[in-house]
Length: 131
Image (cartoon, rainbow, N blue to C red):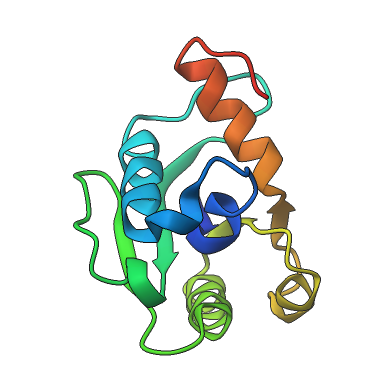
């Protein structure tokens, strides 16, 4: 099975909804949404959700069903290291980030999706239209 590996700062920052006033709160809301099993025709089957948190969001609580990687420094470094460790363990990875530099650092074969894809999936699951 696959691991969904999420760059929380990148996903939270993808929508101008005031997240900058409360980064930890915005990250907590994202984590709660990710705790539900992802569904949809365009969603690959995943058996684990791993989210990299950094900076002001590093201390947010992890909801059941989500494993956090609390980056001590650069979130990009932590995500790249986690992706490499997962790939070395034989796990397939679906990484969610729009960061081109980070994408280039991911192991070969990593399925990379943008934050818009994930936000649209979460919106559909909640019965909301993206936007």
